[in-house]
Length: 123
Image 1: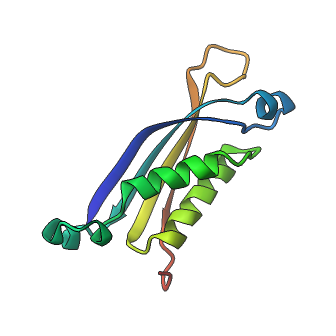
Image 2: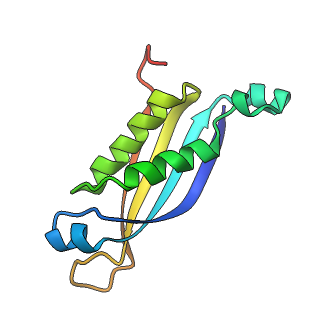
């Protein structure tokens, strides 16, 4: 088993419960960690035998571009796509952070983090 991390993916997106948040948008940070069997790719040196981090970044960017009221919702969409489109991933953790959230205080960021395992029998 091995771990691939794609960290500090920076995107500008339009998520939030307030109309102003979805209209104006704000900066986000996404950190992704996936677990997969990397033994084959470690021996073969072939991209098709591993989890492609370019693919992981692409999924994050595409799903972050679709507005959601809650960060939990966009995070779940990202995880669902990763499991659906890459059968090597067995466990994934995603952290989605809203930078400078509009919560009436001096807060650097608010982060939600979700970890999911591949469902038994799923490929």
